[in-house]
Length: 128
Image (cartoon, rainbow, N blue to C red):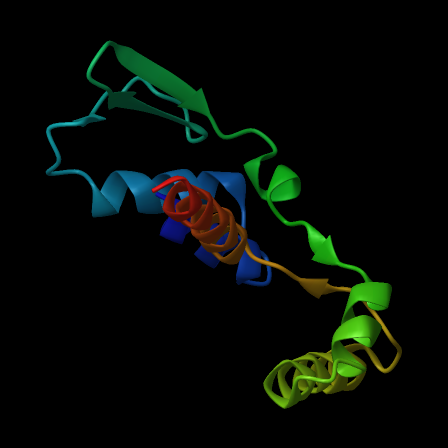
């Protein structure tokens, strides 16, 4: 589900209804996905262990399309670590090429999730 959300956030013209459509198509054979033909285009349900939860995808795209600020990109471009500096320089050049001016660059849902998961695992490792 996170991958589908990430794809729609990155895709130009991505929409909430297309996100829900992808989720339903990819997981249609899953026993966890509720196949309710009465759901509108922006609603899907998942059977969790405790209960079935209905999700409304209204404004999913808007809420999950956070931007990396220009200041963060600049900071990355000035980093002493050459790998980080190279990657942020690519991001900066790409945003300049696309917009013709300095603009924010998307930090995707999946990359944020991975980052938070890595922080969580690091915190757990410290406790062991």
